[in-house]
Image (cartoon, rainbow, N blue to C red; front, side, top):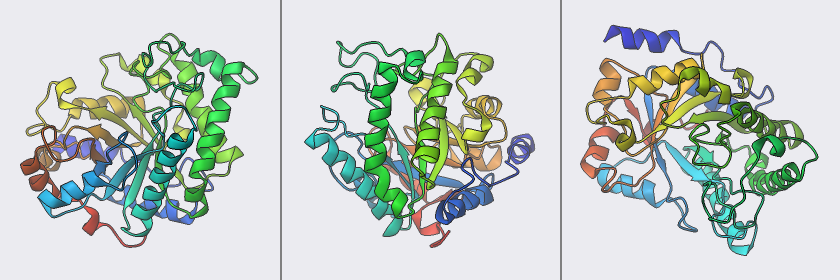
Length: 341
């Protein structure tokens, strides 16, 4: 029991300065708060109903209905889903998500994380998945990160439009835990270059440079997110962009993939792997079907920074478990967050 807790303490980062040295005060306050609770408490997150269109946060409302608690963190996409890219419907969905992110922070005083299901930028109907649509061209990530190539021009134009859509959040100083290229090493998204992972790492750095240095977005806390893989740690580390580009690292773990029971486990093996991939970083369960055992996290560890179920309370996220976990003293729900950071 003590070994797991000591390991968590030893891996706690020494500084809360942030990957972006010019972080806005609000984002710096959030990052400092995250450092202050890491290894002590676990933030309860919840995704929105990503991909179904325009709406507020029905998953959070569903959680409150069964548990009497709202999540402390809401996960929202920055992708518009409905093709073609940047058509009327696509833009409306992105604008709605951006508005929801701002309202969750401003009106509910909650934390926001945003992932980017970046559609293949080489075609208007491209999705994040390598085989959707079937006619999608293969993305040569090496060429995409090469300045002046046609692939690079297409990617930079898409990033420009995405940044334009997110500009209100930067202008309003809304802190966002930004998670680009999630499940970065998995292989099911187009950005995973398993032949030369260094290209994918370079793409992460390109996104960081564009948002932070070229566009001046200083409201972003940078989250590196891996997938459930059996690859050797040395291979997985080749996707890592470097410590200076990352504030938080994590992994997406679904129990059907993990082969472990969330009711009696806390995924120590995945925590240990990510501590080697991203040494010294706060570690989060960036996605899961349901939160693993708070009793195990409290007694043996690991105490993830946050755990974020993708599904609303239901078949894949049992309502009785949601109620039990949300009311566990280890977990930070919306009512337990400070009103100011």
